[in-house]
Image 1 (cartoon, rainbow, N blue to C red):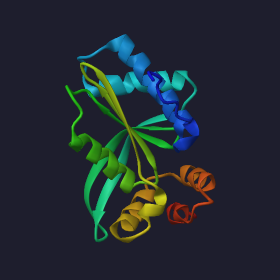
Image 2: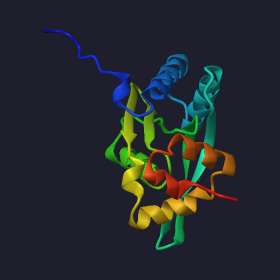
Image 3: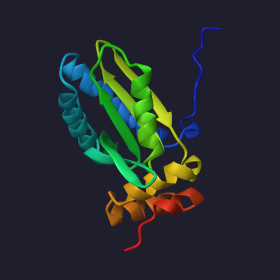
Length: 176
């Protein structure tokens, strides 16, 4: 009766990696606590991720396009192992707008998994995903086509190789 459900890590895309990221998040939170600005936590988390053997890149640019014209530019806080977007917050509580921001990043990039990490008074995490197969049509395709130019050829090739079984991944592939 009081047993907690056991979930298989095979149920979710990149679940092994997200578990490692969450472990890193809690290690940083335990060390620094609450009260710093987001960039302090992002830098500390980047150090912790690298210490644990993960590749982390910060301030990844994301351009937003409407009808082929750039209308804005945002920056994802961290990209881990070229697979997972991390959005770092240091607020009292996460709100729907924070989740919407992460989902929009996932919609206009080739990344399918994102974590929202809040270094607030109590640590909070949210995992969101947006499958690449859902990104094939309309304005999303335009955004993806435009944003793929931000990825260097090596990253695009590695992304394509990881996702070559998916027909959606072909729209991200860069040939030079």
